[in-house]
Each structure stands twice: as structure tokens, then as C-alpha cells.
Image 1 (tube, rainbow, N blue to C red):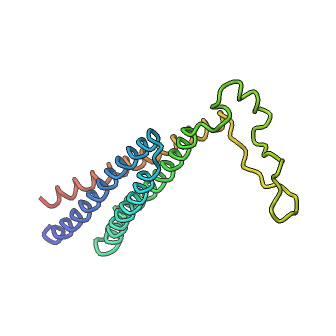
Image 2: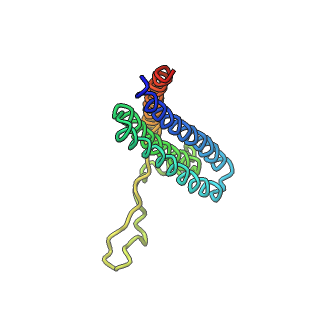
Image 3: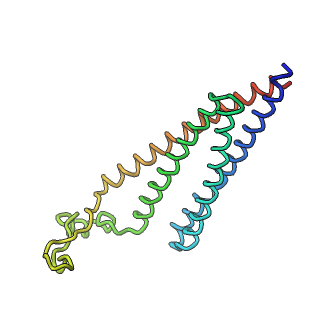
Length: 197
């Protein structure tokens, strides 16, 4: 048992360092989400852009700590099972960030109320036949070839709602995966504490 106590202590130290980094990531998500809500309310983009810079920096620091912990678990601590949990968590965190950003982009677009279906029934009737069609008047390419460069088609309300629902569902799946993995790591930490006693 004496030979495993130093290794258990090292494992616990790595897991606790990871846990502190994960808590830092959670706090940054709280700031990021509240900053986005403030942006939607105020329409002031500058603070939100700065928050994105800060969040990117914080997440990069956390990711580096987790990568180092994963490398130690795979290497000198010989716990590839725990390293695999950290890898799984990192992949779920990557998906969470992706779908958080997708959801925010969709919500930002909707908040600007530029879609024809947000303008009311009379505007919707007037533009229902023109959804997705670019105006042809004066829309030729500057090289003189005469072909048009059109805007992407506007999504219908149903398409928009489906995209938002899909992003929300994928985000929830990522959060569930993160929580499940954190629970497995918590159980492993409890076992290590018992071994160390």
C-alpha cells in the first residue's frame, strides 16, 4: 500500500488541478452567457466583443491545463482510463462551445428583426414570393460579366426555429455528456481518497 500512496497523492493532485480548471471554465461560461444577454438587451457590441476575446483566452488556459493533466495521466501516472475521461470531456466541451456559439448567432440574428416573417403579416404577404430572391437591378458583378452575386436565401420561420431547436438539443447533449463524465471523475477521485487513507 505504501508504494501506491505517492501515486494516489499525485493522481489526486492532478484531478484536483483539473477540477479547479473546470470550475474556472464554468465561471467563464456564466460571464459569457450573461454578457451575451446584456448584448441582446443593449445592442452594444463592443463589450461583447471584448468578452469573446477574454473568454477565448480563459478557455485556452483551461484547455492547456486539461491537456497537461491528460498527458500526465497517460504517461507517468499510468491511468489511461482517467485520461480517456478527460479526452471525452474535452470533446464534449468543444461541442458545447460550438453549439453555444451557433445558438447565440441565431438569437442575435433574430434580435435584429430583419427577417420578413418578423415584420408582421402585411410585410410577410408582400415578401412571401421574394424570400431568398436577390434583387436583380444593379446586381451585376463588377467585372462586367453581367452575372449576379446574390445573398443567401432568407430562412423561413420554420427553418429558423428548427435550426435553433437543433442547436439547443445538441448543446443539451454536450452538457449531459460533460456532467456524466464529471460524475465518473468524481467517483474515481473518491476511490483514490479511500485508497490514500
